[in-house]
Length: 139
Image 1 (cartoon, rainbow, N blue to C red):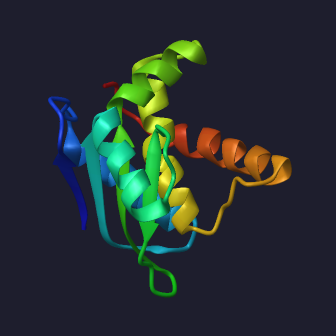
Image 2: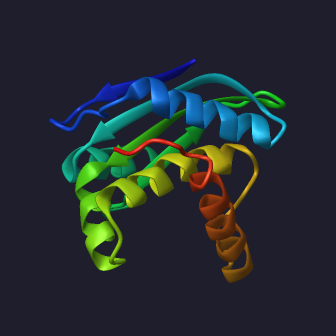
């Protein structure tokens, strides 16, 4: 089950559409959707998560905790709406486009994609683009 939680004023306009899309992306990678929780938050909230659990003292757009078992994906994905807004501006894309990229980024990590090396990062961006094209609704 895909669940959305909010620690900020931001709310997804159509959770059902997003949930369906995320499930289709997971299935397209020959995986099964288990319990995945998205927590939308602000910079300060994600900074505290980053410090407490990862010992990182910096802002980030997404933190994902993977609890997957075999091909069944489970996890918690924290998304800083502040960072998504800033990144959208920096990358000259719409907020909606950047939000979709970040939302699917966490799931792609659960599917086994990494982004530590330049080669891995290139593959991750390619997969993000591929999966965003599977989204068929406007925000």
